[in-house]
Amino acid sequence: MSVHAVFVAPYFGASMTHCLRVMAALPDLKLGIVTCVPEAHVPKGVRLSGHYRIDNPMDPGQLTVAVRAFQKEWGRVDRLIGYLEQLQESLAAAREALGIPGIHRQVAHNFRDKNQMKKVLHQAGVPVAKQSLVRSVEDALAFLDTCGMIVLKPLDGMGSKNTIRVSTKDELFRALNILMPSPSRPVQAEEFVTGDEHTLEAMSINGEVVWHSSSYYLPGPLQVIENPWMQYCVLLPRERIEPHVESFLPTNAQALKALGLRTGMSHMEWFHRKDNSVRIGEVGARPPGVNIMRLNGLVHGVDFWAKWAELEVHHRFEMPERKLAAGCAFLRGKGRGRTVASVTGLDEALAKVGNAVVEGKRPKVGQPRSSHYEGEGWVIVQHESTQGVLNAMKEIITRTEIQYK
Ligand SMILES: Nc1ncnc2c1ncn2[C@@H]1O[C@H](COP(=O)(O)OP(=O)(O)O)[C@@H](O)[C@H]1O
Ligand SMILES: [Mg+2]
Image 1: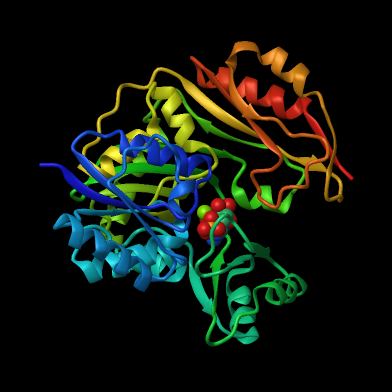
Image 2: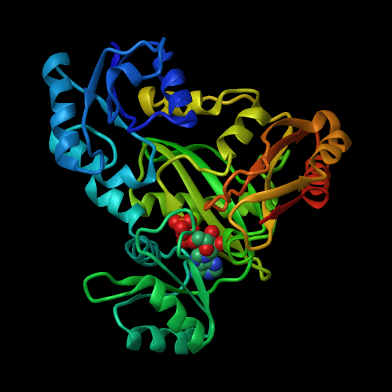
């Protein structure tokens, strides 16, 4: 019997378009979309059984009305799918209202609210940073006093936006001016955790992790945000299960169980500390950014988005062995300006790295400075060995220089 699925795709950027195409190509599937764009702007050549336009996908009421229309027309809807982080709670509310299985409100809230997430994890005995909800300057001062160095961030933050490390009173007041905590809008505060930051991508079916992979942030996102000139890398090693990952797996499984994810993809960020202990940073019940999907596709010789879609639609996941290592170097500029003034060294770097280069986005002189930490451009490389990928990424980020003006 075919699965009836509705995919919430508000706007069609490159990833969303790709995702829709590979999902629509799955067998035994009747697929409809809920979107903000009129039918004329939906990607062409995609086999769809319905289109429902709404104007606010963050509104669970609008999602519910749209998906109910599919239920009426098709008799049933088995899956309500969407990967954008900010839609997770409205998707969950609509599933719950319509009796569609999958992530419901409580589980979505566990994943979306950083304080709730850490509370649930801590109660389950999973190691997380000490945390506090800051509603006032007194709260913030007391927590800083207890911890010495803290991180402040929005409760529903993403993309490291407004994530601020604080170790002095001065820095605290500066951060409070940006985050503006209040009793009705508290801010998340955490003790600063040191250690190497890794990801853990996991595919779960019926509460079991059936596949996982871990990548390295070189360095961690906070250091990247604090140093806007820093070019950085994400590394997916040749070995899928390195020793530090293997020993972390029970913690990952315990965390997903506590948060309530049964079927779907999760993207965790975790710290591996010098003394070998670990702390979970956060977990998203969705695919990762920073090209980790593409990197996983390369090293396994598959389209990873298609694998994700199959997991979501058919609750199936199979993966060939890993044959390569891969990585992504992110290119960022120096200076204070708002525009890319020059790009030098990139062509020499690419020539030096040769056929390890897979694809990239070339920074262009004159383009406005990116507001995203992914920077002005990126280069994806692959090699049979992890060291080969590290060498290639190093060539790229040390030879390429971007200046702003
Ligand atoms: N308690 C912490 N200790 C150390 N670094 C942290 C802490 N919380 C966040 N960070 C850093 O800030 C980054 C962004 O924080 P995170 O909680 O992942 O929020 P987001 O949802 O914006 O990604 C993390 O990847 C990590 O580098
Ligand atoms: Mg994060």
